Length: 152
Image (cartoon, rainbow, N blue to C red; front, side, top):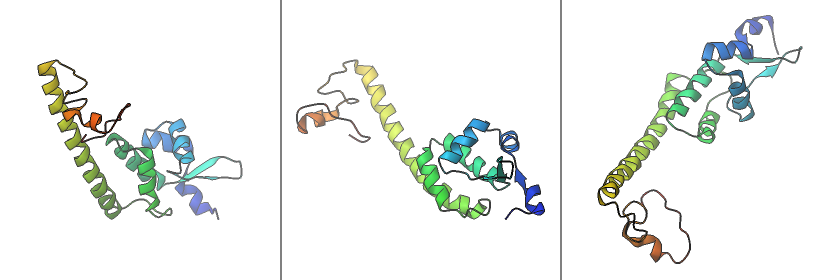
């Protein structure tokens, strides 16, 4: 139920955009993806609880870390809808994302190191290239195109 006390705590989409630095269209997109929630007032205008500002900040930090929106949405499902994420909530989310980030850094470091070797030799051999087909592992998987996964 919307009371006069709640009205002062609620923000318009324009206010959320101005306070968060996120475009109105992005806020609408986040809402369609279930990352944030609003309700409609009697004039059919979106109204957001103030807690949405912290959720938007969390979304933007996670995006800067390269975390896909689907993973962000899954993480946000673990948080209650009726309050802003707390420092304890952030610790749980950031611990998981930190592990994921460490893994990506490791994979990128390996890729960079293999790239440097490839630049040095210049062969780009499809059978023996350490970047494209290290140890011809793709040939061992049979004929046809093969998708390289990290670590292959």
